[in-house]
Image (cartoon, rainbow, N blue to C red; front, side, top):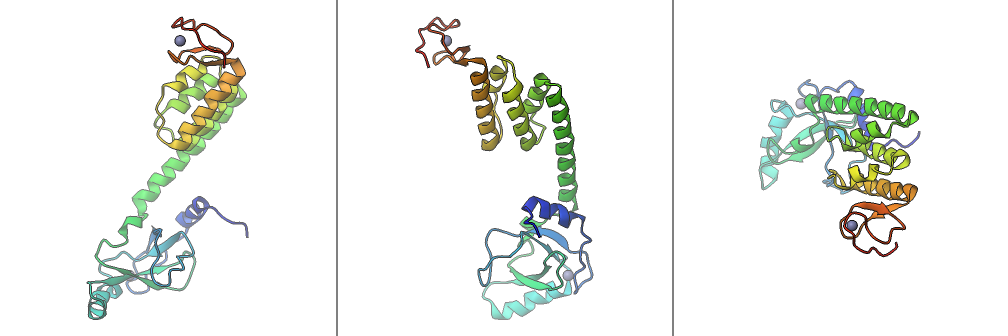
Length: 225
Ligand SMILES: [Zn+2]
Ligand SMILES: [Zn+2]
């Protein structure tokens, strides 16, 4: 079987029927495993689990009494199972909110679904604009803060390939939210300069011809790049 990315796994697990907790028969919640592991230190083996987060679960309630005798700090355990697995296991928690940070509840899943839908739409719109070489519209998508960074990165690459001489100007003074996107935009600007034989004036940052000796904006002498 081909190796699946974490993203692909999440997509698969989101579509799965939630297993029911064997102790309380309540639907278990999809849960992102933390970076640290407990016990043997071998890690979780999978990035997601289904966990019973029902506070009325008899197993979880009994845990407080049971572990209270053996551990120094108050503790209980939550029942969990690997997606698609049959082996129900237990992880320690030290308060009712223990481990809830990784909870991927229904609200989260709906948000994820909407994000993915927007991404799909944006990519097909980008493809259309790319085919018609409409870099102006692609640039708008690249600068739109409501668009997911991954799609904005794709847009930046397209602007680098298709953009006019003044496309770089729109990108230069814009703040982008992630280092990856910022880096992609930087590369697009370099590509635009490359394609149009331009560069930034070292004094006033206006875009000038690569071969210019004097900046036409600030009149300073600019050494040839
Ligand atoms: Zn339960
Ligand atoms: Zn200048």
